[in-house]
Image (cartoon, rainbow, N blue to C red; front, top):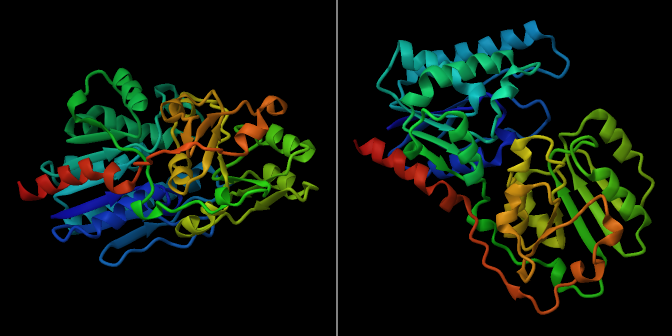
Length: 376
């Protein structure tokens, strides 16, 4: 079966997509072609033997609306021409940003093509009215007027986001709306080295996008700089506003290191086991983030790190664990002086917790749907 995968966002920024493509490449009955865009943050381009990837140019920061629109039109043109030539029996697309070429191909060239949809994020309906969302708003109209009803599969990343999505679009058949979490590969199930070392400083890690406005990085840094405890923080983040990056680079602290180039996803299993604590710092400024259980939660857990997260992130509450390790602990990052540091910095005789969060399990349902379609 010919399967087209479409994402109008750089593949390299979304490990759940590249993990899925890795698994799709093992499906001998599938001929997979990917339509995406280049990345502008110097990430190594993703590639996989047996999968052809077609990339369009991506807008650069500061480009005006006309330039951005022309690049989006070019993505639509390249993808639509590619679909006409490839003639896929099924299309899987990610996020509303990618919907327009799918809509045009389905309406004008192949109404019989099966459509699968996955959302990395939950979008509140009012978000589509925001500045900079004109093109995404147009693409989303194609979803609501045609693609949502046509799709045989729609997925969100957790049950609460699925619930919110169904409340926003009550006309959609709930039977075809699924949950597909963002988990790392099963090969990441590695023993943690840092927790085995006694008498060592507490080593904390932060991965991912970061800003002073949307995260609790400032109070955390202030606590680490003034804390009487031996606690260190490494930050691996390449998606950082210039002002935040300059502030981090200017910190005068031998306890905090900022790696502005980030780290390649494939190297994470090598470094994660050298930390005791993985941090999640989002302030929950939107419902999307309040109900987010981010990739890094499961990446940290897979490598045996405890996870500290702010109480506002309700999407992490179901994974909370204080009595078994690795622990998932609520921490008020604006009241760090009150945390029970001695308790959090050692595990004592805690029992081991099963961590059943792997990509193979997460995408099994979708792969089953795709396989069943290929045999029909």
